[in-house]
Image (cartoon, rainbow, N blue to C red; front, side, top):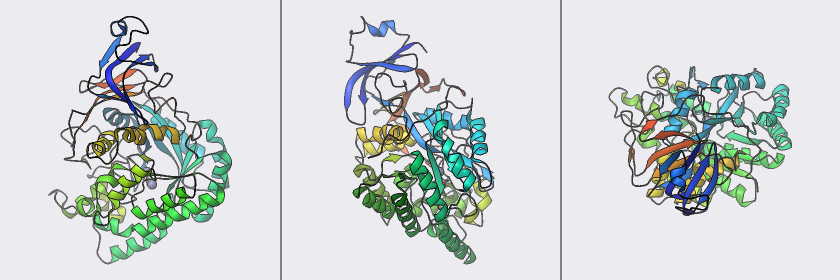
Amino acid sequence: MGTLLVRGGTVVSASGRTEADVLVDGERIVAVLQPGSTLLGHDLASSVDTVVDATGKYVIPGGIDAHTHMELPFGGTNASDTFETGTTAAAWGGTTSIIDFAVQKTGEAVETGLAAWHEKAGGNCAVDYGFHQIIGGVDEQSLKAMETLVDEGITSYKLFMAYPGVFYSDDAQILKAMQKAADLGLMTMMHAENGPAIDVLAEQLYNQGKTTPYFHGIARAWQLEEEATHRAIMLADLTGAPLYVVHVSAKQAVEQLAAARDRGKNVFGETCPQYLYLSLEEQLGATGDPTWGDFEGAKWVCSTPLRSRAEGHQDAMWQGLRTNDLQMVSTDHCPFCMKDQKELGRGDFRAIPNGIGSIEHRMDLLYQGVVTGEITLERWVELTSTTPARMFGLYGTKGVIAPGADADIVVYDPAGHTSIGLEKTHHMNMDHSAWEGFEIDGHVDVVISRGDVLVSDGAFHGRAGHGRFLKRGLTQYLT
Ligand code: URP
Ligand code: ZN
Ligand code: ZN
C-alpha cells in the first residue's frame, strides 16, 4: 500500500471538474493538489511509492452499486455469482463498493438470515460490501429484530409487493414495517409491483399457451408498477417513513415519484442500466440465438420487466435521471446462466429465475449516456457514486475524492474503448452476457480500493478478502 499519487488527471465530482493530483497515504486520500504542486515537498512523484499517470483521463470516486444479489436463492436455484466472482467483476468495471441484500426468508429469524449473509460474504469480497436487509416475513418477531439493524450497520431494508408466497408483504405488513422504520430512521426500499394481480395475468397467459419469455413482460403490466408505486408512496406518507423505490422501469411510476417529490416527500427512485437501454420488443421478444430460439428472451427476464420502447419508457428513465426524479442507477445484479438455470422456465415463463447480470458494466453503460448527451459528466459521478453514498449512509468515507475519504479511485479514459461480450470483457459467472455487442466509448483503466490498485494495465491485482464489511450510517439524503 504505502503512498500513491494519481497524477495529471481531471478530477470529476458531482458538482464540477478540476485538473488535480490526488495524494493517497495508506487507505485514505490525504490531499487534492494543483497539478505538479510542490506544496507537500519537492517532486512528490519521486517520493511516493506508486505513481498512477492519469493524463488525459478522468479521476472519479469508485463506483457504488447499491443493489446486488450475490448467491441469491431464487426460483429453485441460486444467483450464479458468488461474492468472490461478483465483486471481482465489480472491480473490473470500476465499482469499489456494493450493497447486497441479506435475506430473511418467511418463517426464519432475521438474525439467522443476516448471519448467513455475513458467512457468505466474509473473507470473500474483492471490494467493500454492505448489506440491506430483506424482510421476507413481516411479523412480531421480525418487526422486533428491525430494532437491532442500525447497530449492525444496516440502515435500510427491502419489502416486496411482488412474489406472493416468496417475499411478498401485504398492505398491513407494509404499514407495520414502515411505522417501525419511521421510528428507527431506516430507509424502506420497495419492490413496487402488484404481485397478486401479476400472478392472475401470468396464469391466464400460460393457460392460453402464451408461455415464452416475452409474456413475462406482458403479465407484469406497467399499470401494476404504477399502482404499487402509488400505494407505497401513500403508505410511506401516512407513516412518515422515507421511501426508496428500487428498479423503476415504467414511465408512469416515475410520474408517481415526481408527483410525491413535488409535494416535498422523502421519496426516491432507482433505475438500472437494463431499463435505460433494453426493451420488451428487442430483448424479451428476441429469437436470434439459434441455441435458444424463442426462449432467448429468458436472458433478460427480470422484475420489474423490460418495457416497450414504443411506449417511451427508456426515454422517460433518462429524463428522470436528468430531472432528479430518479436519483440513482444500480444494477440489481442477479445473474443466472441460461443452462440449468434460466432453462428451468422453458415452456413456462413463470418459472424462469428473475435477474440480469450487469455489475461489471454499470460505470461504462452510464458513461455512454455522457457520450450520447443524455447526462453530464458530473451527473454520471453523482448517479453512480456520490448519491448512492449519501442515500445509504456512506458519504464522506465513500462517494467523494477529498482528504479523509477512502482512497477508492477510478481512472477512466474517455479516449479508450470497451467492447462488451462473453469473449471480450466478461468476468461475471454467467454463460451469456445480457450486454453482448455493446460498444462503449470509454474505458476503466485503473481501479483503486482503499489505496490498493485492484486493476491496472488490463490485469487484476486484487484478491478475495480485500473487501471489508461497511457498517453504514443513516441516510444522508433526506430533505
Ligand atoms: O429480477 C430481479 N429483479 N431479480 C432480483 C430480485 C429482485 O426483485 O430484486
Ligand atoms: Zn426487487
Ligand atoms: Zn433486486
